[in-house]
Length: 292
Image (cartoon, rainbow, N blue to C red; front, side):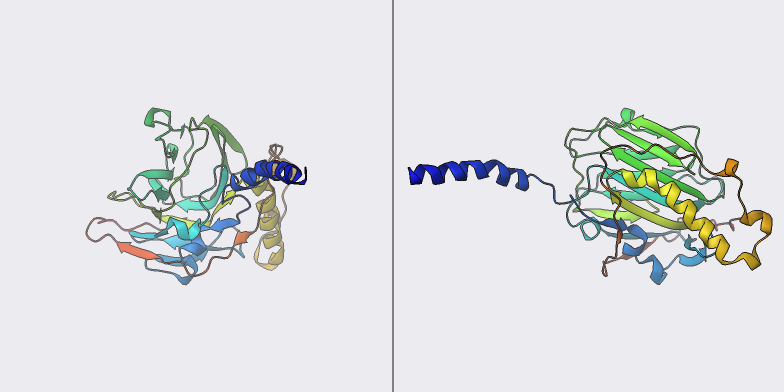
């Protein structure tokens, strides 16, 4: 009887052990600051400091045709999250149509991409090749290539992707990926370019963060607006009084937050990942005009 009792207790533990082993490695993972991971603060070739959205903000101007890259596993050692938020604050050269971020598999397949311009494109392909090219989400009628600062939040959850621009425009598109999508992290992540492509990002960027879960995308507007207002109040002597005050009508509308989402986590301070700069000689005869 005692032996049977022990066997019974062991059988009860099996589902618990299996359940724990089924938890993905990225569950509970911190956020990833892509700019810090690619060593933007150390100002690699083609990158210099610039003024951000608020007076106290620091941004980076990318003005030379260079590719900044790092092994994807250094940024996501536990795997790429299934559902995630991508947050950025960016100002591009007017008329630009170029990638902001691209993630390749070990076989060179483009798995994830964010393309700025007109239209705005979000590229995604999981381990099964889904969604197929005709079903890739395209956000027509939205253009970020106007030489102005824009806050962009992308929320990917389940079978849909939501784009939030400047806390005002919110558009959702279908994302018919597989039920258990996976992105290979044995490849490379590239900023501002694609492999064997002449289109490169030119402009200013202040933030580029990837957060597990989608709640960060819906909460980013409220938090960033408060931060910017605080920065303006820190230097009132250098600003006009009519710019320091904002009427209630000018406040961006609060976006609905989805329920049962995981809380936003702090951005991870990555160590010293390997960063590679690839110069593209002789293929870009133009010079980036100044941004206004």
